[in-house]
Length: 218
Image (cartoon, rainbow, N blue to C red; front, side, top):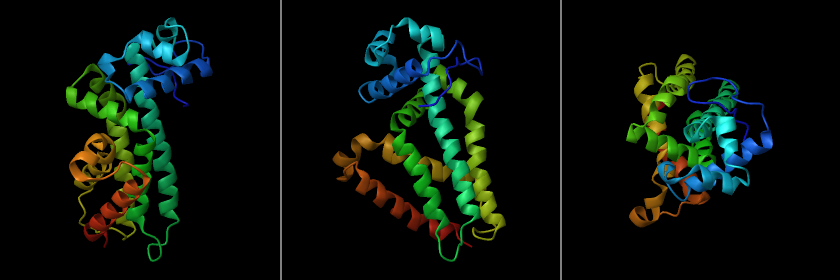
């Protein structure tokens, strides 16, 4: 998965790295999070699912929370990579032929879809006001927000989006809505008769694009 092993209080590797073991532990965490909450997942379960000795979690991540924080780090890293690519595409975009709003929305929705377990974990930890919430807020929250707001501001500067656009409200609204198909995926069928599949995601992207284009474009 490409995340760096680290503890909630450090910014560097905790131990000499065995990429195969670390990736196996992170992948196992993703699988287990589709079945149960973080609080219900044990160190032994993660290690067993990864096919490694449980001591490897303490060796590489210090403790279980360190592993979960690295798991969230992976989502944030993927988000930054996507934002960097998005920014390049938007700079080369011809607003007369291409739709910047669709590009923004599809990029973020696809990142969240591909990292659904991480997004759900992050959302639940923030709502529960857990210890991981504080670590996330200190390390990532402002950085991810700045990346998104920078893209919106650049589109305003280029005259593609409205000059009176409130960047803060727009970024908050978009990020909140773009995550809902993942966070509320469990009730899509029961409540809205929507299958949580690629066709629904595509429809969700097009629906949001239509709505936001009316308010964003200059």
